[in-house]
Length: 385
Image 1 (cartoon, rainbow, N blue to C red):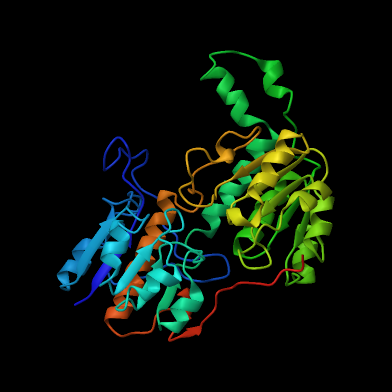
Image 2 (image 1 turned 135 degrees about the vertical axis):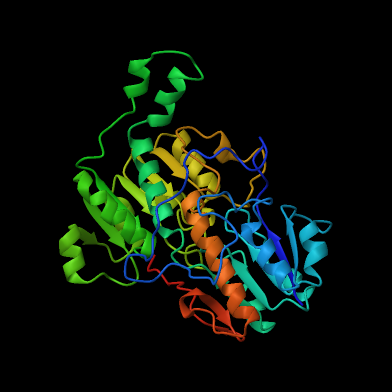
């Protein structure tokens, strides 16, 4: 019998379960491109329920207990005395989320001799040290495509919120109890006609480009793999061979590249300085792709008109993190990939992986990052920067 340690974000402050706004969610059977959604043998939750928090347990407890396994669920993941560190020592499986990551460091891997499977409930496994996973023969898997469209919708929302100065306008009529039209529109523009760029045209980046096309913007992108000519013609895309060319050309830049050695702190003072004065950045990829303090400086001196993002480092960030108070920001906690719609898919995907693992059946190839001590397919790319 196995011990499954699951690290999830805390319950709602008003208690669990919440009072849901809708009675259900639309059924989706496949993603763009044809990949099917997760197909476990069973589910012990109703799609549309909040399963990503501690009490939600990803809907796994009845399934695991029926098979005699032990499930431990916690939100306590920081420090040597955390529940994560205490329980990891004899765990066989670790489940975590990008939104409340259990950082699986080399030290933690060394102190978890029984660990053989690390699952990301969602997409993006950079909180797992992959070389250590390979060295210790740990399989790493994630629920590919489960929340890609969710993130793309969030990115488009944040682009519009920044350009139209939505959040300050909302604040005038709520927190400030005013009706300050002039203040609300003094930084409010139309997106129409702007040059909008995407850094990283994978699943999420492509979904963003397709969703922005109807806004009559001029679309740009940079990716290590240039798209097919027919796709470029269909969307009216301009390809840039490096990120510097892209950054200098656009009014709005949406970041969708993976985090790796070539993208860490890529958007520093120099690169931000190459962007047009009054540009906007939206980052729903990983916080470390931008230099934290360089972003603050660019906003404070007025070079950037706005920065919105959904990703921080570390997560959760400390109370005094400068992005909480910098001007002209539209930050959210790491929620872009965690709508209730996406939770139904990534929770089902976790169940599917566990069913395969315990039944000694192959895990879907598109879910695998590391398998059997070898890299199976991280999707990490080397960008020309």
